[in-house]
Every structure is written in structure tokens, then in C-alpha cells.
Length: 143
Image (cartoon, rainbow, N blue to C red; front, top):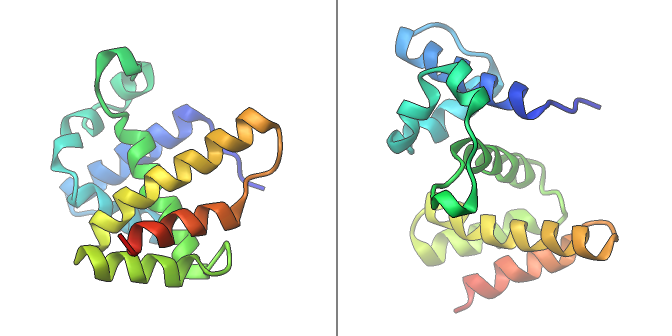
């Protein structure tokens, strides 16, 4: 199993961003990341310097979103939807995207559900509850 470090993830996004700017060929994963990088121009400065990115700290007190966490969540959700894992997440995503009129907006709402699932798992010491995650996304699609 591949378990990248925080530094690996940050370098990956910085390298993908560099390749986009240089119009160099992208790996399939970089191409997927590029779609989300393009939709978040506010992160370009954070992605411009890999060494600064590795050293950066994104704390709640700073009031800034961690661009690497945000982009990683986009990638995770993209993968979940593409393979329908947990089973039913693809349909829940499609319902939410139709309701919001935007896959991007649906992703952002799903991030909240994903974060809640991870937080609950960490707090309880139990495995992540995929059904609770799907239920959260479905609730958002029906309100």
C-alpha cells in the first residue's frame, strides 16, 4: 500500500503545478490533480515553491485553508466516485451535484461529510463508517 508522507503530497502537487505551467506531460494522477489545481487559482502561490510548501504550517488559528489537504480531498473524492467506494457514493455524489448544479460544489460539501466521518472514526477508535458518509451526502442532496 502506498502511504505518502505530508511532504510527498505537497511535493506531488507542486510538481504537478510546475508541469502544468511548463506544459510538460503529466502522469494520469497529475492530470487529475491538474483539473482541481485549475479550479483553485487561489492556491497557485502555495504550489509555486515546493520547499516553502514543505515548510509551511496551516493551522486553524491562521484562518487559512490548507491547499494540500483541500486538493487531496478532491482527489480522494474523485477516486471514490470513479470506483463507487464506499458502494453508493457515486449515486449520492451525482444526486448532490445535480442538486447544486456543480460537481465542484458537490465536492466541497462532500469534504465536510468526509471530514466528519474521519473525525468520528478518530474519536471513537472505530473504522470509518462509509454508510454514515453516504447518508451525510444524501441528506445534503435532499435539502
